[in-house]
Image (spheres, rainbow, N blue to C red):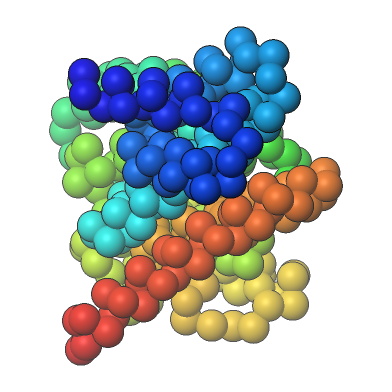
Length: 295
């Protein structure tokens, strides 16, 4: 209650033209945070007829959202065990304020429960992969449909409704379902693509730990030779990183750079800059963890 009263007192001063007073008001609202002040700023921006108030509300709301989601991403990167995909939910909400994160999580939970019910007995790896393929592409009726830099395919927004999306979203779905049955399925990242890998064990460290790869576009299984052909086709250097799983922190950075290019392609340079800054936050967090835990 006290915070609400403090917020209202600050909002009442947003029309003050004194720079010193506005500076104090701005700092006060920013200190209250997005969760406390966000909705009130949006409401005031809509209802006020004062141009100065509208502009200040718009600025403060954008600033609070940026600070809030920066903090959320940094926390995610710090506690990430290498296999957590929550960054997609965080960024989908940042990029689309209408995105209902809880609804999306509830839908995923329904898929997980159905998967767990249908998949009660573990079998040979190839059979497990086949069952996942049938579940995702037949029973759940997902269809891989992706045009580069297509926002609707990159963000979660309508993924669970349209059942169409990018490699990022399909790898996320695969990995999160596999995790429920402790299937060692992970993601391999390329400069402009992702594939899945089925390993002999958790935390695979060498190529000998890999059983086979999975194409997230259709669930088809393929061998290491398929990776070799992909690298040759796109003139990519043959590196060990293209055969082994990467962490979801690395995937998040690639995802952010993909979003950055998508925003630049439609002239949204400010939003592209935010994606770049988010990537830098994750990279800096990874660096700090590496420094704190030297091998």
